Image (cartoon, rainbow, N blue to C red; front, top):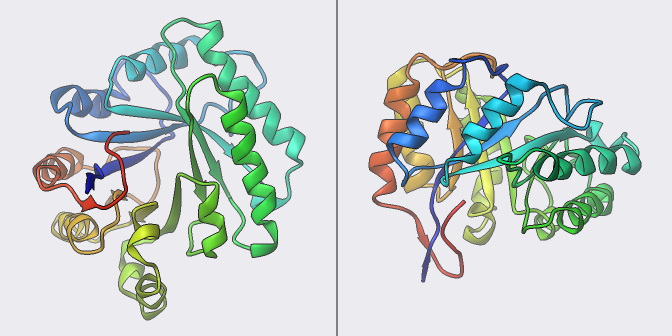
Length: 258
């Protein structure tokens, strides 16, 4: 039996000023046993230059200094419409950040708008293989179809976002029916993003249940409708996560860490 550490999944789409990333940096620094996977997205991808602007470089170095933070570069594949060469170019740019600017660390890639059509399993798997071939160190690959997908998609992904929707939709018959078909082996490779939560109480309740009852390690539950500002209850949320992490999910055949 190996321990699988739950983690908070943060689409960090807020532009980095001197203070704008501080809520995350403070949480990660204060509680090093709390794990985060953080997506950075300078310009709907890495942008046209070899490095992002100076504010991003400063913010990324701050993230890289925290061992409990896994930094993922954002790319989008437009549900399978983007050419493979375009995706590969974005991946090469992200991988180059570490080489071009000491102190930067990109640990993998977040593939947004990932297709759910089973006919495109090979397309997104090829992207995942390219990530792992391009990065010097072992890389994390996260798909974001935002919905439940065929089991074949899990073969090349480290994690898949199976739900990205309003928190109220989590209890729908459709979601619960699909969840009931998802066994423990696949749940441990899944992430839930539940936004527009009606209250802090419901936010914390769903956060706890995702870890303790559903066996899903990755989550973001927020009262915000989007990812461009911090949830007012962010501090209460991660503090609750910290307490629940002391009772981490234990699943056979998994490994701990970010």
